[in-house]
Structure formats: structure tokens, C-alpha cells
Length: 246
Image (cartoon, rainbow, N blue to C red):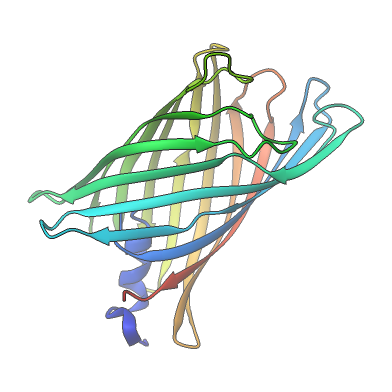
């Protein structure tokens, strides 16, 4: 198995990529498709998320891990008889992260939502706090990520008071396959409602021209969604480009 500038084989790197706080520079492109949106349940939405992850090592052994989610959205009939597209609101997170002697990795930091004022934007600034804790034991990675967002305006166009919780578990094999299960649940305190998708995915790390690329396919089901939210199945494809440390 090629090692190259990454100093590790594909199996080790695949398990590192299952860790959201791994000190690895990567650029995932994630495509999601959801159906049955809108009050008439006739709408659909496709979202392409660009999610660059950039770590910064500190002198005390800790890391700053940044993740920015930049979505481009296409949707039809969410509002009956219309379609919209454009860049959705940008979500930026940064964690101060350390790993304890018991191999518990934790991170805490700010999260900010930047409105893009497009046809698919909330047009509302929001910010809050984000935290994550996880462990890796053998081939297993498991933990939970959470954040809370509040609007920052006196008269917001979209009042925001939402808690996001993402429990996750992943199993990585010696031939660089990773099987994962997670939920990306949101509780909207304004609407008093949950959005709960349960997602399963499989990914394979490949070495292409000496460069690691992680391919993922997944399917999910909406266990709970607010009125007008997506229902039934969702689908996901992702390609993640891994860059060498400087």
C-alpha cells in the first residue's frame, strides 16, 4: 500500500477520516437529495456542500480545527409551482481540540451562520457554540457533535433558536472501508419541532496517483420532520480529497 507524503497506509488514514477532529486537511464535496418537501409534499431539494476542513497545530499539543460548510441548493415545488437555486447560508465552525490520556478527544468553540441573501438564504445572521467528544477504540469511532444557534438581529427575517445534535458511530476495516451510522437531528425551539434523519453510509479510501481520495455513498430516512419538511428517504454521495500536511 502506498505511503507517500501522508506517512501512513490507507487503512490508518481511513480511520482517521472517521474522526471529525482529525488534524488532516481535506476538502469534501457532499451531495444530498431530499423529497416530499413543502406543504403539498411535492417539493424536492438537492444540496451540494463544499466542506473544507483545515487544522492548525498549537504549541501546547492542542489543535484548532476549522470546518466551513458552503451549500449550493437547487429546489423545485417546495413553494408550489416555483423553483429556486443559489448559495445557501454559510456555516463556519472552529474547535479548540485536545486528546486526553484516556484517548477521549474533545473540542469546543464558536459557530457562525453567514447569510448569503440568495433565494435560498435565511437572510439572518446567527451564532452560537459548538462542542464535540469522541473516542476511537480498535476499528471503532464513536461520539457526538452538537451546536446551538441563535439569531443576532433585533428583527430577524427568520427567527433562529435551534439545537443540532449529531451522534455517530463508524467501523473501519483493514482494507480501508468504513461503515457508519449517524443522525443529524435539529430541534427548532421557535417551532417546537424536531428534524431527525437517520443516515447510513459506506466509504472507501482509494489512493489515486499517490493521492488519497475518500468515496462515500449513503442513504437515510426521515424519522421526524416539521410540517413542510422532507419525508421518507434521502440520498447522499460524497468525494473527499485529502491533502498532505505541509
